Length: 311
Image 1 (cartoon, rainbow, N blue to C red):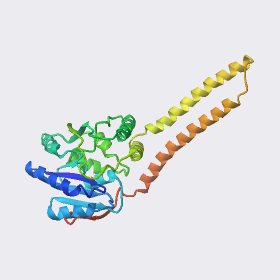
Image 2: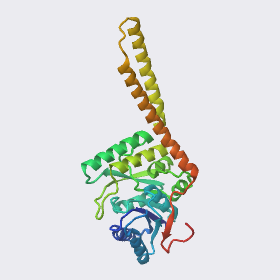
Image 3: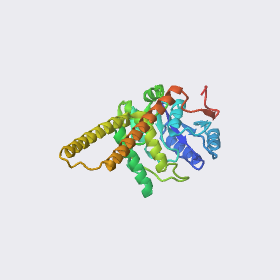
Image 4: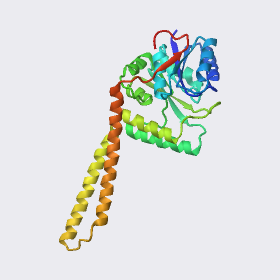
């Protein structure tokens, strides 16, 4: 029988570990699906890993690893993929906002030959106005930069083993799982779901973290911001030509006036565009610097006893 692995990134989720393990185990056993649950503790400062260890002691199908510090969700996903041994792997949130009920449907589609099964949000559930605005801005920015609709996609998806192997073979350190799983292609199906309410804890995302996440992922997956620098340069050149022609016409007509305010505005405009351009270029240089150093995506501090081999 085919083995299904479920990767669960977990950061300060001590309230959800036991419930999530029980809900998923019960569902998968009920549907006669052989499984393993891979919890990835992303450097939590609460009792998340201790509860993962307890769950693993009770159920041999539960596995867990713990990072030496917080490396972020992207690192957690790829660490989980590297540990998972299943013929198919599902990535989902530890808080069960990704509903477990659609897992049998995703698994069935995989058995029918689909290699990627995307979970598509039909509803974002109950969210505060500010969080909805922040998420809307984030997805709009990302959709424009990477040329794919990010508004309804999520990290909730099933991947065939061959897709997982391709993702793990990519040498880059700055990864964007959601976009990379779209970029690799393969035969894809979609399953709609409604985002569920958290039973325990609260979301770790806010406006600032979403914007930081957007900028980091945009520059790791798209060169469009660099092209914006070129666009700004051409825009400034056209503006300068128009202003130059206007100045010459006024000079020859004898209506030229003192140009001090114009000079100040031009200096401020040019200076602002130059600083923005240098900032964008600097961000890409930082990405190159991080890739060249070749540091690992994550460092594993410890893992449960039922994980074999060197990590």
